[in-house]
Each structure stands twice: as C-alpha cells, then as structure tokens.
Length: 337
Image (cartoon, rainbow, N blue to C red; front, side, top):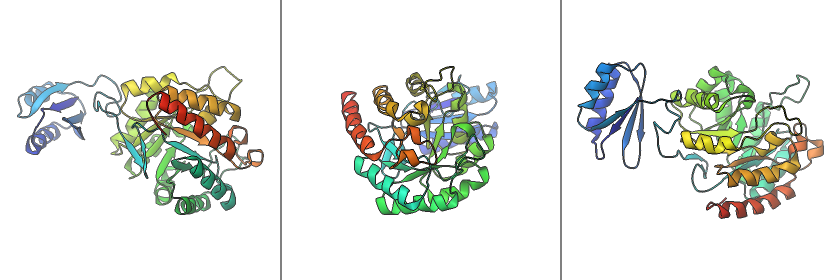
C-alpha cells in the first residue's frame, strides 16, 4: 500500500508515519514529489495498521497498490522518473540516443566509432565487453580489457558509457569502469543479478526478455528498485514471435502501455529488434513518434568485418543521416534530441 501525505506535511509527521509502518513490519520506500510525499509500504497488509495510520497527523489517505509491481508502478510514483547518465536525461522532453558497436573489438574500432557517434549527436556510448552469445564458439568479448577501452573512450570523447554485465560477481568490477549497467534480454530474470545491480550505485538499463510479458518485465525492474536503485531505464528490444523475416518483432505498443502503468523511462532498440540495418531507421523514427524516451542503436565503422551483429549495425555516415531525420520526428511530436 501507499500512504499519501497531505500537502505541506512536515518532516516530523513523515518520520512518525515511517516509524509506525516499521513497527508493523513494513519495508519503506519514500518518494518525495513536487507537491506531495508518498510512502510506499511493502509487506503484508494489516487492517490494524491501516486504521492506525488513517488517524495520524499529516496523512491524507491510504491507497492499496493493486499491481504486482509495487515500486515500479505509477500508483506508487505518479510523476515520471528522470534518470541521469552523465549529462543525458532519460524520461524528460529530450530523446537521448545511445550509440556504438555491439562489441568492443579493438581500441581503434571503438575510438573511431565513439568519435563518429558523438559528432552525430549521440548522448551515450554503448559497447559490449562481455558478450553472452548463443554459440559458445562465437566471440565472447574482451572482458576487462574491453572495459578499460570504454573508459578510455569516455575520457577522450566525454561521452558516458554503458555496457552489459552478465555475472553477479562482476557487478562491482564493471561499475568501476562505466556510467550505466545493462542487463541483457537473456538475463532479465536472473534474479541474483537483478538484486546485485539494484545494490550498485549506477543507473541500470533493463532489456525486455525474448519472450517476456510486460508484467514480467516490470517485475524484473521491481527487483532492482526494491533493492534501493530507482535509476532504472527499460528497453524494448523486440520479442520472439512466429515471424522469421526479422530477428525479433518490435513491440512498439509496449512503449505506450509501459509508460501508462510505470513511471520508469522506456527506450527502444531498433537494432536487435529487427536484425537488419535497413530497418533501423524506419523503426527508430516510429519509436520516437510512439513516445520512446530514447534509442539504443548499433554503429560500426566496418559492419562487414564486425565480430558481432554486423548485419544490424549502421555505418557512421548512415547514423549521422538518421540523427538528422530523428530530430525532425522529435520536433513533430513536441520533443527534441
């Protein structure tokens, strides 16, 4: 349930309510909005607790949370969450673009790509240092060497960086090098990993699982938020359907639906969702028109030589052209890149 405090409720009144909730065994999550303070109480609802709270000074009303995702839903936090990664803000009027190679392959490849995407207007650099692949014989990433190259690219370009963390024991290591942690589609329900990134003091980019429902996706976010990390960005990257013409099926309706029921920002990955570079542009523009809070796009200077996902990667000049087209779409829907 949530306890909605009256406008102008004092800190003392808030503290007294929190103290009473803890006495009844609830876990507390505090949300201070512009107009009101909301106290999320997670635990078994007790009628005695409700009747006791309703008469306390400063309490306006008690509201039960009906959705299974208590903290990630708008019932707990009606206003949209803004997640800051470096100077980029996700969830506001701007539509930041994350761009870079699927995998960090070499210093030359990464720096060339980083400088190109920055020049084109990207806000965050992406690059995989750990690559969970379907085949054990495929390129698995440069691991810590790749992390060091990402940190160097940030130093040179000024772009904050995001990379995927695969193993819970690597969260602390990866956090030392990057500005945002990514949980990939295959790990969306790796609950140990979700708790670990929830305890990290870094924003988290949470991709939707290959066959996950929206509710399952938001429950995965709930693991992170309930561990104390509210800086979660959701990413729709396509789901597996019967269609074989594209790598996955991009579910743009999920963007609008998740924004309706959750306060967390929602990005779209047009690269993994389609698997074809020719479709990245149209789906990027459709995502911005649908209200996405950002994009994550794969860019590679030589896609034909890429060690991972070359067919879905844009060349730098194509990415620069797309950024100009996206600016026009964003302006048409009252936003900007």
